[in-house]
Amino acid sequence: MIVTLTPNPSIDATIALDSALEPGTVHRAHSMTHVAGGKGINVAHAVTLAHQPNIAVFPAADNDPFVPLVRDINVKIKTVSIDEPIRTNTTVTEQSGRTTKLNGKGPLVDEKAQQLLIDATSAAAADAAWVVMAGSLPNGVPSDFYVTAIKSLRESAPNVRIALDTSDKPMEEIAKNLSTAAPDLIKPNGLELGQLVGEDGLALEEAAEQGDFSGVIAAARKVNAQGVAYVLVTLGAAGALLVTESGAWLASPPPIDVVSTVGAGDSSLAGFLLAQAAGKSLAESLQQSVAYGSAATSLPGTTIPTPDMLNLEQTEVSELN
Image (cartoon, rainbow, N blue to C red; front, side, top):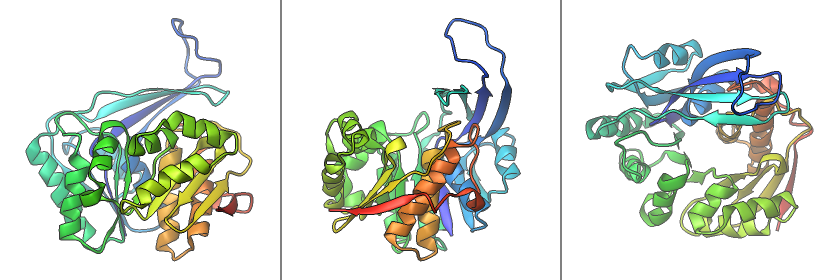
């Protein structure tokens, strides 16, 4: 089973335009959707579509409009009640594939609710192979929340493996505390990898786009050395790298027409964890990860792919030095 913890979920509103977005002008939407979103929710959705067991833990009042949206996608949930409504994130997509995001302000989650979220995750983790902690943090939650959550989970469920996907201050706090709160897997993009190791992440991404992955591998190995077994770095059109202390693999995406990048990274993480849960090798797990992420980018809005949408045959994996 895979458990996800999403401290700051969102209602994802996607507005599709049939023309280019021009600031300061009036546009008419070609289509508009509202779905349950948030990194951990997206991972849980992908796992559900693969017919594998999972539980999604998140804060929300019972009558929050977000809750029925999660139930609509058949994800099993465990909620911690809060007073304020779940935020709405708005995405504007253009026919070119360009995406503009406007993320709403998260609700207040007080100290009591924070502890209840950790307790609920620990309880669910008793029967889990992986716990995914993912996304930004809402108001009232300190930037070291994931540090606290990882430490607590290590005590209550020492055999479960932990995957982390976050950025900015929460990622920087993880970087400061890897000696005591290292997850088993971190899934940064190039920018977030830079935040982890104190380097220019944009420069790492630019080099990777030109085919030079040495900087990304060297940065990831610094993270490996601090106790993180797997560093899964998503690099957009350049594919993804999986780096361990003893190996590095590059997966190149299959040919796709980009429609929306929303949820692609979350789908990639879900693909990797599903492959690991199925006993696949690291190279095969990376292949499935990139196939999932690529499939997601070919779909509108926050649409999560099903296993039959994957193009594994054209997702190429090579081992690097």
